[in-house]
Image 1 (cartoon, one colour):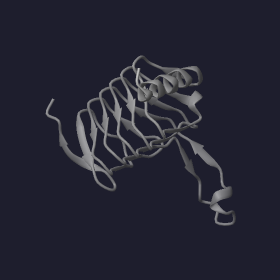
Image 2 (spheres, one colour):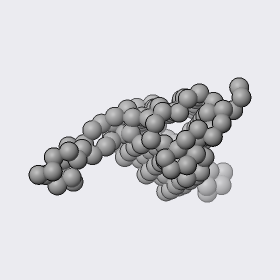
Image 3 (cartoon, one colour):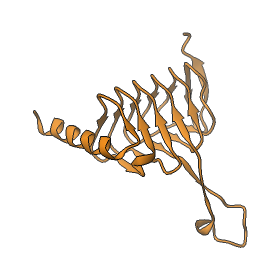
Image 4 (cartoon, one colour):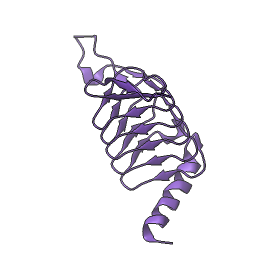
Length: 153
């Protein structure tokens, strides 16, 4: 077993012990930051590549056969900011479930905001900021992300 494979195994065993759910064949690469893992559910055959930040405080569900490329951010919280008499940093935080269904490819440096649902078979192009739900078999990209095309399935 190589040094890299040992690291993947150690991270898998640790994540499985603290997460809400961890499927089979989950690869969590080095330098992945998961905040509040007990609110994170991950299906089978999922890869989370280096430099990803996942804040599962408001709950995140990731289906099976999902690839999350390096530098991706997935959020499940959002700051309130409506009270102009209170500094934004001191205002309440909303906890909002975020969901990524099966068979999704999340490109490098994508940001998925809190409360988003990404339906199965979708592709999120590198650098996209996902501000609204993504329909089944849809390719999206841009800031904010817009539909590029349907995968034709």
